[in-house]
Amino acid sequence: MILVNTDYITGKELEMLGIVKGSTIQSKNLGRDISQGFKTLVGGELKAYNEMMNDARALATKRMVEEATELGADAVVNIRYSSAAVMTGAAEVIAYGTAVKFR
Image 1 (tube, rainbow, N blue to C red):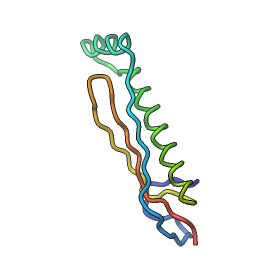
Image 2: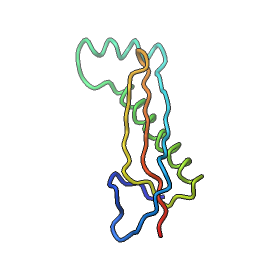
Image 3: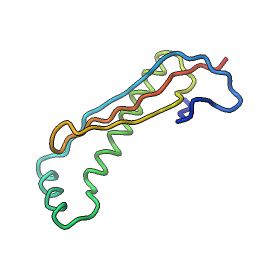
Image 4: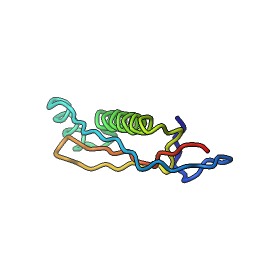
């Protein structure tokens, strides 16, 4: 499966199959949440949250690819990501794009 953030793939004629998406909501455990809260007092990278968001993007991408595969897609073009805080210590990540088949 080819994944790109452009709306084309050089040298390929594309048939649009439709929008595909994948999402997840991730959170850290209470102990990690408290330790990251203390980290905000002194500044610096919140590594536990960074790891959480990386994991969430990977899972959202995987789910988007699974949906594209079900449609018989060869690629997903124009991929975008969006995230939002759902509650303290939890975030939703959505990956979306257009599933395409090569002609």
